[in-house]
Length: 103
Image (tube, rainbow, N blue to C red; front, top):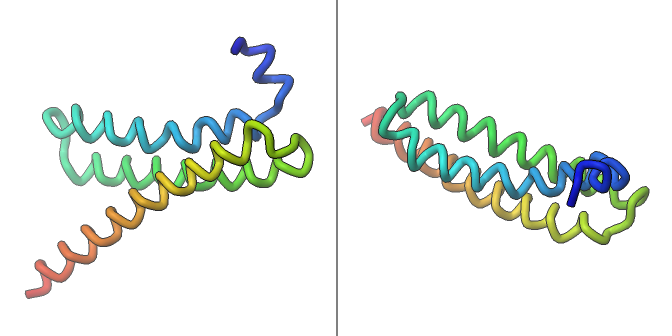
């Protein structure tokens, strides 16, 4: 798909695609970044990417009335599920680390 076709569909289509790409980029950054950077900085970048992915999925959902569900709904649902899963993992790891630090 070329840039002209993407611009005709509108921003919600791009947001829907980016919503499920964000967690995949997060995985790649965590795989290769752990060898190079600080773990805390990588975790913050990952949390930011997860939040951006969720916001982009919401934007895609909001575009359904104008552009229709075709091409938006499945990608937005995938984005919400993937980002939600990673957010859940992030939150449980954070709470476990906090509990360990408190003892």
